Length: 579
Image 1 (tube, rainbow, N blue to C red):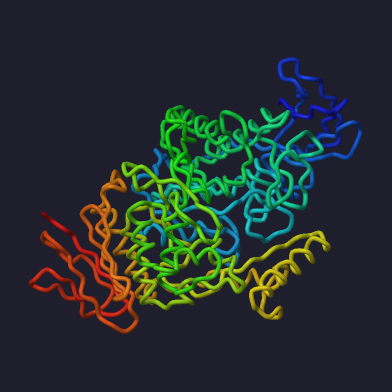
Image 2 (image 1 turned 90 degrees about the vertical axis):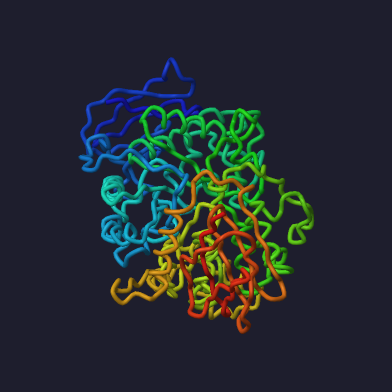
């Protein structure tokens, strides 16, 4: 078996393999690489010692059964007995469901999560989007402090647990998307700098020195992260990846790493014969993110649309703090702009930033390339108390939000539990093993929210196991589930039946009345009418055509003979327009 590692500054490298020491030799074909052949079997523990130092885990270890700071184990991922053939599910026509393995069930494992997949299939979603599963110190956390980008967190079930989960999802007809973090590694357990220049001081990010994408040695660093992404898609039969905060990938090279990554993923899709996709999280509002590489874009297949979220959140809640300020001045106007143009900030002034921001999308952009949502792990968990949207606005307004998300123009995404209006909080929790780091995170969290008026005693302690436990979903019995669950099922079914995947931004129009509180969205053949007024009925002009009501969130919705739609307070209706 071949063992190899990139360690360009080492004078010697030794493989420590189940009690044996095997010296590695410089690879004559790859500068800075070391290699050796050694007999090994699955389960054998191994690591590398550089210049006679401590035994370190392999940066490309696939299995770390004792955690990211201990030696890895040999594993044969190709030996997994896949039960369900899978031809893939692409992004066009998708309905995503964001999930955190550690709180999706009280057990917090892949196998326990797999037991809930049948309910997601009945809901009508097409893909489960897993938050990061790469190893991090401790047992519980969000996953964005991972330090081993090729491996899988052992408390969740390790690599075979992820394979079992994906296979079970495929058995239910569900694709799987994985959230991956390439912009930083966690503050504890990161040993990559011992091996080589994985980070550079040429750029700085909120987490410190940037990942080295453009300084000397960056060819191999790029290959490390691209190789990790391709390996997850290939070895775990994933359908796509969500790329965390790509705006923090500092990269001055002529070919952006993101374009190199998208080319590698497109090549893998051609090789395996099934669609694969990449979705970026980006705050740049930059059309290059999803523009084709041949048009000097990055070639990513989709991106999260925070502008839509912010506009919808401001309209639903009336909140105007922080970045909501730009959207809260005229929330329905902002919502109409994001629904029809994609971005509110497409070159105009942002008061929150104190500068102009973004660039306009081409109206011919397929609308599915933008992912739309009314809540995500970030938007819930980064609130002081982790309160969900249902806890802020109640079920009637949540039903209105669902109509705009699920029958709107963008690829819709739900956050786990919102389909039944879960009110369990989803809070920020950690399990740092370093006491100093744990206290720094705890005190930093308290300072941050105390500055915004929260009493320190009200802010959950991230290190307290009860914070994670409070964040676990409490699943209702399907027979007794709130009416919102059926509402979400109906909306998703309408989306699958009536909305073509090829609709563009040019196919979407919107009208609104800021004072009356109503908005009318025309999305291809579907019309979504909403009234956000808490106490007044609204009369919406539907316009020309024949309209057939398909779904309504409340009683008393009527269609007048003169073509107007009457909506009670805090209600929504979906209609099919013909002619």
